[in-house]
Length: 254
Image (tube, rainbow, N blue to C red):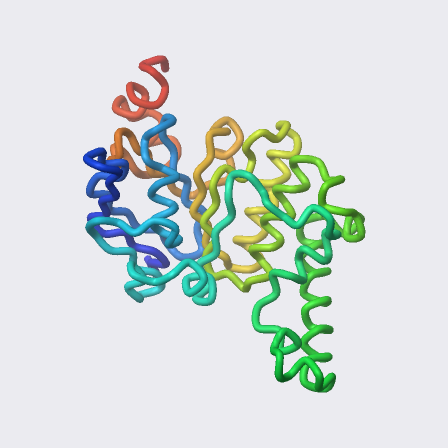
């Protein structure tokens, strides 16, 4: 097994409340790992510690064999660890394509010194455009490339959020509810696209999702949290037949 991400004995407190309590977990490279649990169990707080939004009190985050516990969020993105968030936040007055191009990393045309020398950035602009259209094809958004972001449906906005993450050349994407508040047809489409991203691009995915009836068909491994702790892990079948998970997450109803 090749490990992409390892969380070691991680604790995040708010005052005296331990939102994440001594959590350890491993995300295997090239897999889709699902993190589940009832509201308030610490899932989003754990994700925020992984991507650098929060600094943990104790423990380590090791990404691609590098301790990144003290790294800033933008430094983690440059290393290929890219987040998406529960509520998409594109620039709504820009088109779908323009939103993708803004997420392209390292364009020399953005340099105050290089921007006046066309030969130094025109090739990069062309490469960014080619990459954006390939991502639009992958996500089945090609027909919407010229639509303003505010005209998109909720499901399309989720796909756009994924597309912006892909423009940053991720090795791993950490996602908070990619199918949240989306109708079932589009939710399945989102997870089908996530499988394509894993299979065709080799991107590792760590996902928090409440739409378990949909997500469980697409994921490889599951961690369950309750009251800040990991209470179960394994295959989807194993975790959701675990009595501790049934008690904590499903309220004791099988």
